[in-house]
Image 1 (tube, one colour):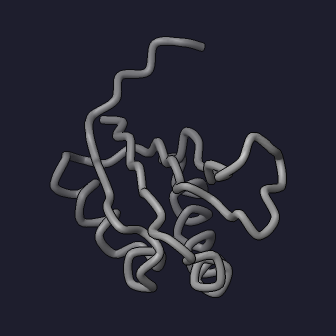
Image 2: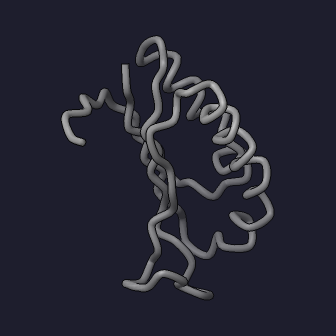
Length: 99
């Protein structure tokens, strides 16, 4: 089943986010190679493609996992969690309708 994983950044975490980004992207790339990634990306803190030093408010991932427990386990092991970038993470089922 598809799951939405939303990570919400803490305050002043842009340096930690940038440092953990390569490991974070490697995990997403692995999901993509398995055909389990629908979409992923950051949410800029400003209404701009490049938020500069304002950074990001969080990230969104929609990916396929066997069950909710597997999705939560994957999310809990994210490098952004380990680096203290995310202050909280929400995981919930998602049903793709369009396109």
